[in-house]
Image (cartoon, rainbow, N blue to C red; front, side):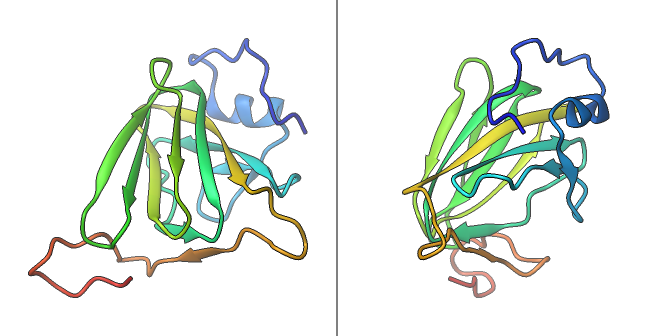
Length: 147
């Protein structure tokens, strides 16, 4: 499985064609990914797909590779949130460990690579914690947010 996709991936390609070309498998939540390398993974999000809110024990670098712009939303404290748009003009963003985050495409599909630093191994895996399905960052003074 290539960790760097070919440069000729046209945004006009169907999402399933991109997934097949990169040997990605369908995740239970609907998007496509690979999990062959513990240090990085390719993720292909389609319209309507949303990565579940999560935080990780490792720092992550999100790299936009192809397709539509991607909205990456982070919340370091469960209250404040900030969105980054990743695309050809801004291709990457760093997420510190233990920061809540989610991502979604702003078009038909977005392809990204997520790298973990330090690279996890069997002794120190990058372990995600997933929020409840209905969780999202909540402004102060409203319902209690999970930290």
